[in-house]
Length: 327
Ligand SMILES: C[S@@+](CC[C@H](N)C(=O)[O-])C[C@H]1O[C@@H](n2cnc3c(N)ncnc32)[C@H](O)[C@@H]1O
Image 1 (cartoon, rainbow, N blue to C red):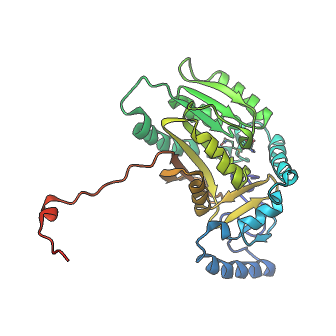
Image 2: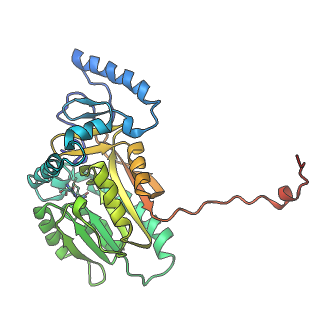
Image 3: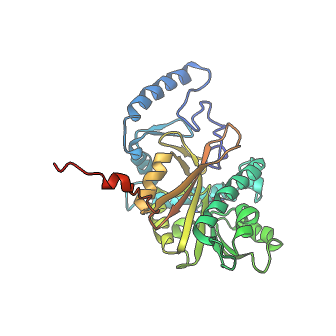
């Protein structure tokens, strides 16, 4: 995700604007022909029910007929660990070459930080209110910031609302910067507690420790199977009432693979299918507003382990007492 792509953002190096859409290139004949092809395919895809069956593209313009086809190519057949290890190694190497700053982790789009944090804050406040705080003031709340980078989200948001925040991030230089950035932030009752230098696919959070697990702009680095197994492990780490927030870029259809940083941008149906595989319930969603037009659309998902309460419609007395015809 050169903020080209994943890193959250633009597909600058692709002449054809494939970023968010499999949409029309601008000028030359080759691109026009490609566009026609995408249009045709899109009408077929619109009928497809399984998001995994939907085609995708990579940052070099290569098309895939399905996510399975792409994964087979990128990480090999099941059991072939060599290619998968390389996938993760390349992802981390990409970020190791990036400056350890807010602008660095946002791919040169440091100026979107404020809009991003404001959007997240509104979402988080509602969730905390509805699920955790309920008028109580002396709760001790703990969060986990996943793929935390330099601690941008912890510093600007999580530490203000939760009492302890743990950070998990595979790039040592980012985590060091986070430690430094957070040293002078917070207080005795609102602080960064633990810094884990581990990739998510290898991380198992502590049992029943967290009220909020925040996953933003990093889950595209995980393969589908590792995505599902991470959330399955993390489910047991939520306290009662706890929830996940996943805030990610969205492809309009299927997926977009970034060859440079080894990440994929998934579509909304693709995410929802993975959440179902994790056995998570979609509690609330919200679109992030106010980001530059050239970037991917960004969505926030709040996910819970418990089933959201159903709104039961009770029949009114008048209607239930009305004589019925017995057939
Ligand atoms: C676009 S940055 C976002 C950082 C942070 N979430 C933020 O929004 O400021 C992507 C982050 O994902 C991290 N990352 C890369 N591969 C990862 C993996 N396998 N597990 C967890 N994080 C990963 C990178 O090191 C980087 O810090």
